[in-house]
Image (cartoon, rainbow, N blue to C red; front, side):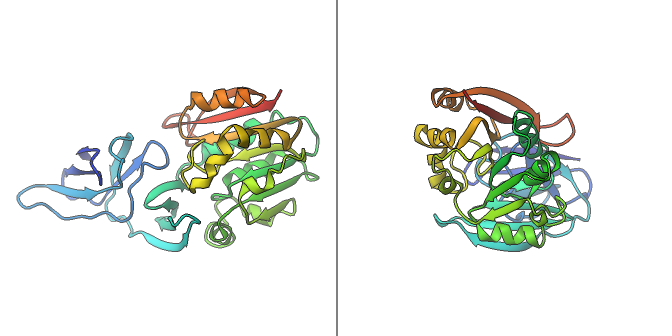
Length: 292
């Protein structure tokens, strides 16, 4: 077991006091963006049984879990890319668990993807057309796309907008097996572009699923803010065929965003779903907005 103490300084840091020699210590946040940033800095303190861990800024204030893992394998860096506004996007793997981080803060992990799958199920359950045309904003590790493919008929069409070419490449290689290679499905068309560029106001989609940030706030790239404001939501509404449905994944509730959705002409429902497939554990938020 490990006991943790620390404070939300910049960078946040704390001390894990160990019983015995069960090291290293793995910590994870209750939501994406609250993870260890990069490799642990470990150094046994003289005359104590503690290990000092340097973690990413804001981690301690997020709420997290921890466990000691004897003999845990070292983390492997599988790929790197740079976002349009200069942030570093990195793909990591450790013991079969994959993660993608932006400037050291975790954007997603293969450890928890139940809420991404719930996004697809909840939205598509409300779509009335028998062979829908679906826009998925953000490929991620393919879990949302796989969940879409699992519930729509063979004659459906799914367009995936992914702004980072590296993420598409990773899904065709190291990440392909996580969600049973969804990019190989003939119903899928991949557009390496900003999802906002596909929202031109012409009503061609029956459902739009957005999972490009940690919620209705620009986390990955700064220009994503245009998706969540009044003008962006108006474009999304006009890009949906009535009675189209918009789904937005979020790490947390966001009442102001709910109000913006309503003002943009949507009927809004908010669902709280488990981050993992298990019922217990952290929860995430799904905004479901139907064209009124």
